[in-house]
Length: 196
Image (cartoon, rainbow, N blue to C red; front, side):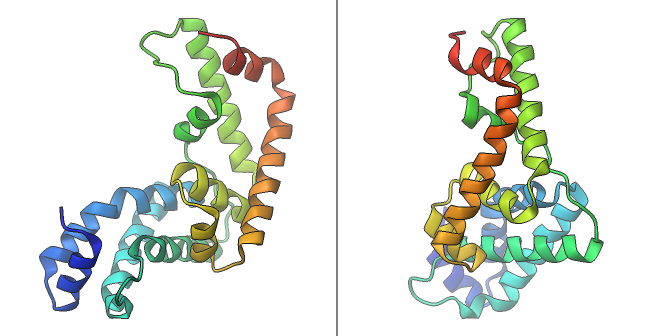
């Protein structure tokens, strides 16, 4: 697969097949991010399309060692904010099993007992509900950091804010989630601390 610099150079000279490669390379990540922020599949699909339309229109702004991926995420996050403002509704987070698995450790469901599987599903529901209760700016840092694996510095670039702001938002989001998990401590303790 072509690296990003080669794809960008080819797109800048009008190679549409290179743009198609770029789209296929990153469409799932951008879609999942938009879905994580908006909680709406249709909206996430529109954001995905609009994101790559903006990329195509502004690809000439990328030069040299400029990193494509954080720029893509910045566009996707900004479009997500715009869609949420435009639609004037609270967004609800789509299921984030990956985040739940990150927090509780992923056991192999094929070998987990039925009781453990039920507990895991309950914990995932608690995680999803906790994340859905976060406001958008805190939810975004959770999605970017835990689901997409971005560093604090990369998130700061994507959100166009200082690293300290990202740290603060992440700290606050974790604190809110921790409080919510403590209310369900019996389940967290059972799933996290007891061996399967």
